[in-house]
Length: 341
Ligand code: SF4
Image (cartoon, rainbow, N blue to C red; front, side):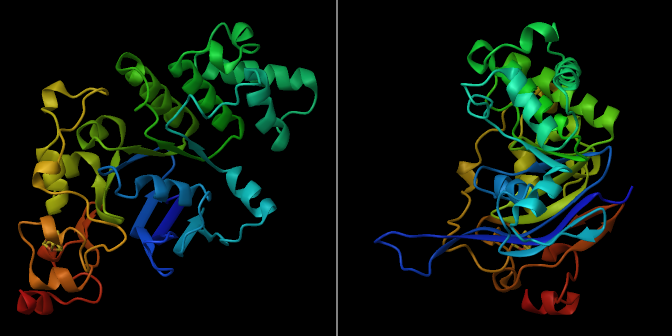
């Protein structure tokens, strides 16, 4: 299917202020990220902490405005204006679930309030009776039962997993076409992570949602997402069908991530990748490396890698990578790359 939400060449800089920094310094959090989300499919956005995954999700949710780049919804370019009515229209279709279920709900309001609010704002229910019926139906869809008991509870009376289910129900209340989930289980007890992930996947299948699942664990990505997108230091470096990326990773960074991932036989939602620090760390995003940002850690780096960011090379079957090892890329001929090497 055609992508419902597509973003290309997203870039985001955050100005840095303070007496030790000059006025023109910036954190180059995302330099070149492209994402395509299709209905009924999950995409795992994978990378170490500091790779820019959350910033990308927040740009897709329009919490951050991109410094440059383009976003389109159902093939129509989105005007990146921050007018309240434009944002509200956009969020009718695209919802974000946050990592922390403990701070995403307001402690002074009960669950009914949290779910009734989006129903009212987006005009999906008007009378009190309609609202109650829809809130109960939402609670049942996220398997919080008996729904009649949960509706009057307050966030402090719920476990972390139950709060995350309420946050998912709140996102569904808007009837979105795209659901973005930023490490939705990383703050939950290991024993319930799989339940929440399975709930999200069931909803994706039942509702035909385009689903972006952010994680630092590439090994578990294949179990939860048809497609995988790998990010390094603000750049998307490889994407395509998850099975193909896990079995035949092309980009040297994807290969490194997989070599540090847990044994496939032990993979479950609670498994953590081993730390990659022994092989280097994500570079400073205030003064990032030039060209391919992975070149200081890459065993195959060539002189051209320091000069330019490689364009995308299509490897067939929807699999692509940004790496000079696999051909020309935009603005870079094969001969140039070979000569520079
Ligand atoms: Fe390594 Fe160069 Fe490929 Fe970057 S472009 S991953 S430095 S070979």
